Image 1 (cartoon, rainbow, N blue to C red):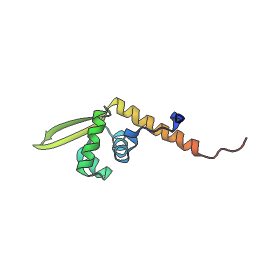
Image 2: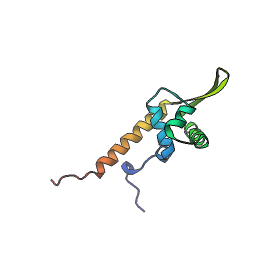
Image 3: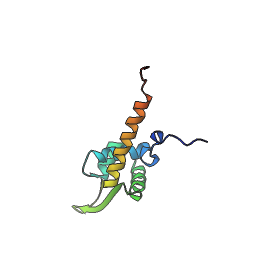
Image 4: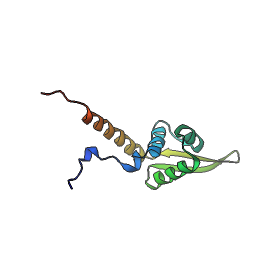
Length: 106
């Protein structure tokens, strides 16, 4: 079986819809708390927690758990690696889109 063109290979960790939604939200803010991420992505608490764990294990996000006014608060932010990988992912999607566009005959 031939090797796929690397331009066509997407990062499966990032491309999964829930994780892509999380990373997209985080790429537009400095950090976000768990409730904000849950509301903006529409994920359940369990799904969001599971996706965040995978992203943290991969070094894409940093999670900080603390108490604010005696209430638990979970804050999430992209790491430098996470910012780089999501930017590369969007760039790859743009290249794929361009490859799919009809090109005029020369």
